[in-house]
Image (cartoon, rainbow, N blue to C red; front, side, top):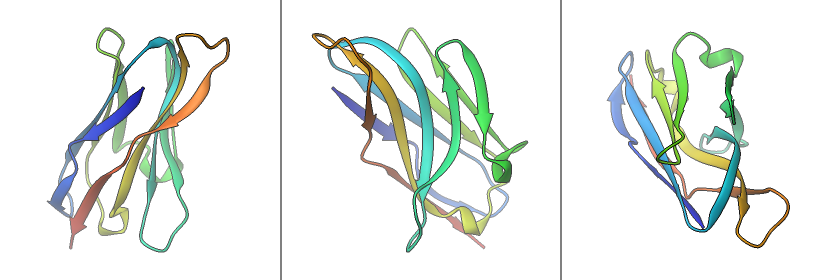
Length: 120
């Protein structure tokens, strides 16, 4: 089972990026999926999440600028980021609660992260 992020890169302040996360492996069911980020020297922080049936939630700092979505057929998670700020430079991580083949309970999985750099 793995989560693979893509879409990071360098963007100017005010610009946009779209991140994606693909879940693969012996997955029976996917619960909540989320994005976190970790800036240099900082703790990892919550960005946005979306449940099995929708219902997105966002950190206050990104409300109105970021949009989280998921493609249930492809087991992917997306994050559209608009009006990016230099202080949002960070490694962005995908997180998902997965129930895998052979397990009765969900467990949390993390991707390897994708770097987003916002230049001023």
